[in-house]
Length: 163
Image 1 (cartoon, rainbow, N blue to C red):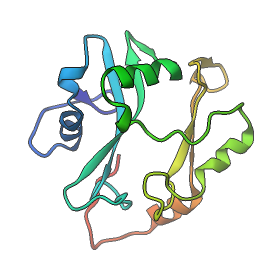
Image 2 (cartoon, helix red, strand yellow):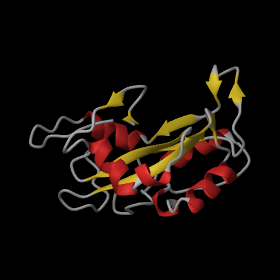
Image 3 (spheres, rainbow, N blue to C red):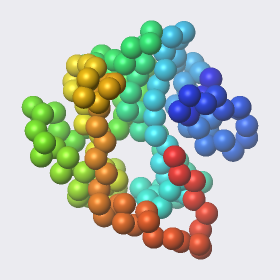
Image 4 (cartoon, one colour):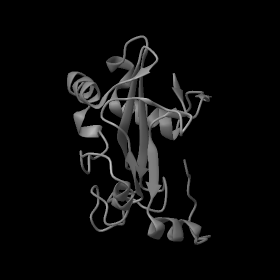
């Protein structure tokens, strides 16, 4: 099954998410009760192309769910290594004690394509936990203000898919 935000997607020629799942070979690498959560990026996926040529996409795996449980970071790394998916993980910017200043990591250049700005950063604990304050999983996304400003600029010259 391939899905997005609790939505199952029908396998179809040209479907971006099915294309990405096939690129990773997930049908042969996953077992019952396992899910890989990823972001697709590249040419015409959004305004930032990350050095990809027309028709090229890449995948950044950011979470693994196994038996209805998000894996802690060390388990996540082990899972990706065991399944030959390490090269498809989103880049780790820093592993450190929590500080409110971590949201500033959203700014700067991309670690994937240094000639482009960073979209943002996702901050989560190395050991998964529930947050009463967040009323759910302890995870925060901080988006680069420069990226947001560019995303707000209308560009009618090209067609883009956002996710």
